[in-house]
Length: 317
Image 1 (cartoon, rainbow, N blue to C red):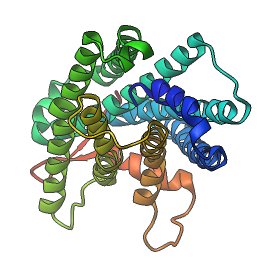
Image 2 (tube, rainbow, N blue to C red):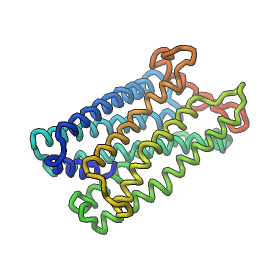
Image 3 (cartoon, rainbow, N blue to C red):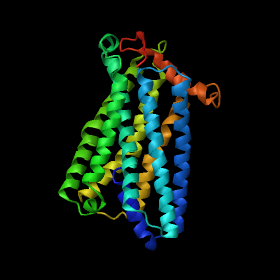
Image 4 (cartoon, helix red, strand yellow):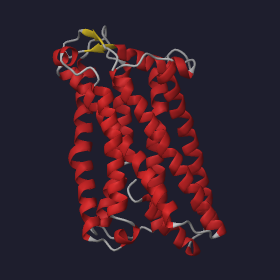
């Protein structure tokens, strides 16, 4: 999340006043969560790269898995360094902290934007099936993914270089501007778009006849959006309220850091498991192999369900 490096630094400075062993154990559980998420996203990346024919939507999901994988790597590194600082009192250089924070925020921003793009892309195919089939630019997915990576990098660099740790703690005008922009982007554009897209997909699922079931990827998208809204949105809102002093700050920096880290790490780790449980066979307890379960979700994407109940074939990219 934004300014994770600041929170980590504050938590380290407060380690003299907290139970270091307790927070070290909590950090270790966070690292285990990150490792599970990294394994899941690595499997999704492998399957989408080598086992399944790439389509308009799986391009986004592949990039989302890569973004989540990168994010979880740097969350795990931050937690490891935090434990080392609390136990050994080692201090990191400013350059190291800045690099970690840039990559941390980069993975978070990219993942959030990819999830938004996936929701919008699917809704466009449902609401405007003729335009989508006949006039949609052929390489729109690839160009959109490239733009999202660039935008995620720019947001991270802007956040960390315009509003470094010292300026953030002093709540300078520059930092306030960055926080206003981030809050507006999240709660005025991204979250409303996710909600609108999810409601549209839910409506399509409800109105689709039993004979022509909607693709499983519809349910997968809805569930990933719900997980994001439950795990990340409240923390992001709390962060904004605390920064603008609209809420009494009774939360210690170290506790807020762990709450933020666990929520965002859970969000980035959950998607591969969502794909698996959506794609597994109901008659089988464990739904067969992971490859088969994921293939059912993403191969459903080759046949699109339009708003009038007809089906169309999805082309690559």
